[in-house]
Image (cartoon, rainbow over all chains, first blue to last red):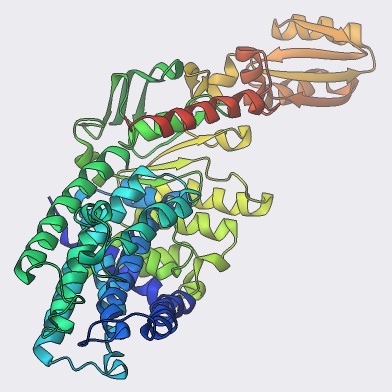
Length: 255
Length: 328
């Protein structure tokens, strides 16, 4: 059972704290911009893209994916903080189902991540990209389902790891590899075959791929998307359902 | 009317038995105190009663609902103030209360009113829109108690409510807590290891090593010590002893130049003695047995002479066990 009031208030709390914490807001927006303009800008001259999009344009969908990945996981990891500082107890003794808590946390991650992705998206004219209004709507939709899936994955991680010492473990051994193995920085089709297999179990891969479809639909060369758009969306939605289900189970057990 | 009933409750964490077959009952709208040293099993018992832990065996009923199998009903009828603060430091007092009102599904029309009431009642109206991280320990505790009452629970659990507070905040919080049953129609279940705090409870259960070793009102418990002791200094102790024996038919003896008499109700006995042998009396003092004496007699140790070292070991063992295993 899902209690609407409980989900609402869990989301409202995260939203309030997000707006209040200016440093978090600035750093979540600064990081993707640093990658986009410093890494992307620097590599643009070095990486031949075979006509079509330039390298900095190519990584733009990947950078959107990065924004979502970091903010979704970070949002869910706040469960560990809540446990450490005792606030989780207030939630756990309330007459609400554990699943409402999971849904509330996943929706918080979804809303906050999508807002941040939209802010980064606003930079597209500076990259010489032209994205139509329909594509913008599509991008926001993909960002929303992708961040719901990744926030659910974050809940699974937060339930398995109990203390915030594990935060750096999660960041270095799970989040960063997920980012590099998503086709965000280089096309999946150009990766060594072993790595290529790994990208296929990474939900972010399909999110980034869907965003590539919407950002440069006309690209045909080596930098083009790797999978069909419909497949991307289907896999992200399936991943969202599966991960929120696992998140619910793990959270219920470990609370 | 009974609001809680616990029967032969046991909780084991691996090889450690934290709660070892306890039974008790709590009457509605009273203050029930769970008194015992650190690591005696108080917090574990509270966690079972408020549905956070499953018991290994035994039953616990709250307002007619089983704390294990009917956890949803039980959760609706209880409020809890944990040992460590469970407020969100980055939200304001009002926001924390509002969060609670939504979480407990307080009707929309009532929400604002009850939050304002809670702010009023905890004396934090002026600080309502300040972040919790700027609050003192006493303010936080008062706010948590008020928050616990927002959804009108039948039982309010307070786990060591005055722990870590300075004496004055403790006193304030204490006055605040003792008014709760009358003002809010609520039963208080609290744990403490401060004897003075247990004095105001209607009923106390003394717990040690996971077992209840005595229970009753503070008065009843102290009675088991044999009542009050009156000490008298007189001009002629020998003569006075004889007179007391003759007139009251009670045993009196002399020690270190003082006569001491053990009586049930000292405050009624002193005027009698003064009336009859008053001219000879030079000084009189009375000593009441304290709960500390009761605890000392029952366990052979002082409650505060921190058994803490041993208690904390148990706590740590339980914590690490819970880290390794599933809840319940």
